[in-house]
Image (cartoon, rainbow, N blue to C red; front, side, top):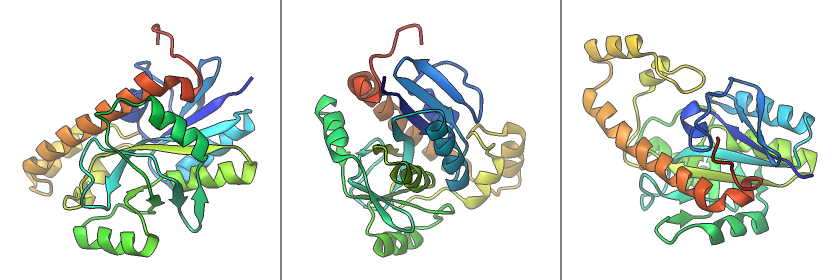
Length: 239
């Protein structure tokens, strides 16, 4: 029996798959054909999760979550299903699997292909994003997919990335905001309030982030609703 292993960095991403409160940094079986691992933000966390899923017998890996745009035509809520993921090297995804996912999606979901690149740090400006895009030939960026792809390639198992855009090219959250974010993506509200009071973070920035994240999550929910069979089979309503 095949088992698809899904890696998400943040609980907000995992909630697009199941409303269950998942334990952090361990494998959870959602149903007969699907397992999920909420690992935390960054390449090393993603690598450990992907390796953990591999060691527990998954037959395919999915990098599932959000990404930042490096292409000015990509807007919050657009879906990136790349043909390749670039880290130190370019790793192709399982194109037949990717194309089957696309066929299940409703027409209103805008899908982009090309290259998704993994960055080791948050890109903090439009100029930095443009340089990173030129270096890697990428249309979008995240911090986990490259590590997951490497584990899949080395294990000889299929891999796809399913990433919805949050931040457009021209907008970057301030780096200090990450200091108010726990490893699972949840927010330290007291410290965030302190950053606001110190004017280290602008309220306008937070007001812009929220609808972008909602748009990305709506797209991920649509993927799960319409292409769930490609993630291991139909999800039971109890989840």
